[in-house]
Length: 122
Image (cartoon, rainbow, N blue to C red; front, top):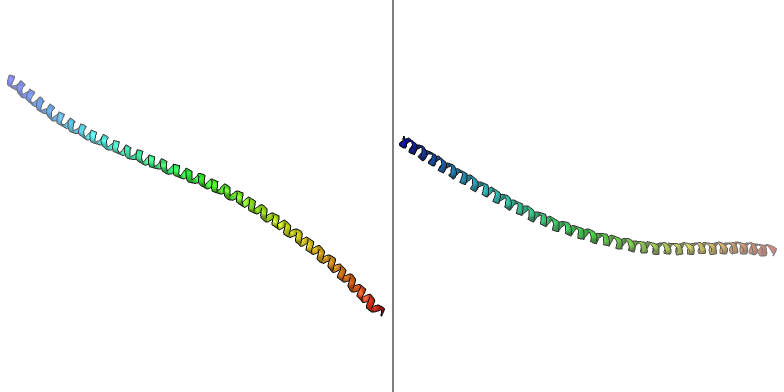
């Protein structure tokens, strides 16, 4: 009986030792998996930080473009006002020249009539 007990105890010890080795191997595998996940998370954090930097750079670029657009709009507004003023001045001069030409044309017609009258009177 003692011998059977000893064999049973030896067998149990052997199985327990094997179970412990398997469990230890599984735990080491889990530790490796967790460490791999930690590395992946750190990599993702670095990627996110890089993306944040890129987004901040894009925001700065957009703000710079907005300032450039406002500056160009202001410049165009000033230039278009100057062009409109120039157009108005040119138009006024053309009207003035037309009036002068019309007045001269009337005088020329009047003088032609007078010349015909004078020539006709002879």
